[in-house]
Image (cartoon, rainbow, N blue to C red; front, side):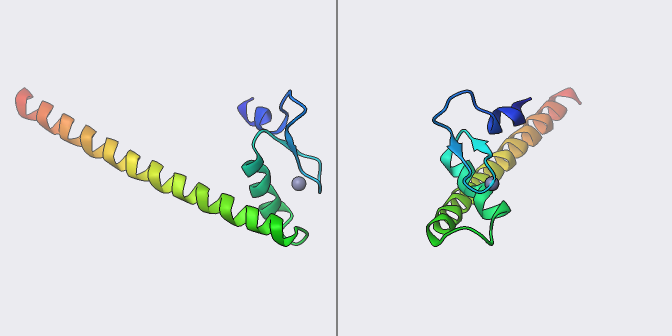
Length: 87
Ligand SMILES: [Zn+2]
């Protein structure tokens, strides 16, 4: 359901792939799609857009992993303290 919303937005100003016609809500999702699915056909400018969108995605993933590790460490200590008071 949510996956379909990524590719079939209701508005007409969506980003549309010139190679296969797939629609994307966000321009950077289109740039990632072009670089992954049409790597042999895209122009230099589209490749640049793909590279920068991929770099931004990697940075976002790195931040997400840091936050996830932080949450796990906090949870670990909360359970550790709860265990100390339970014994
Ligand atoms: Zn495409």
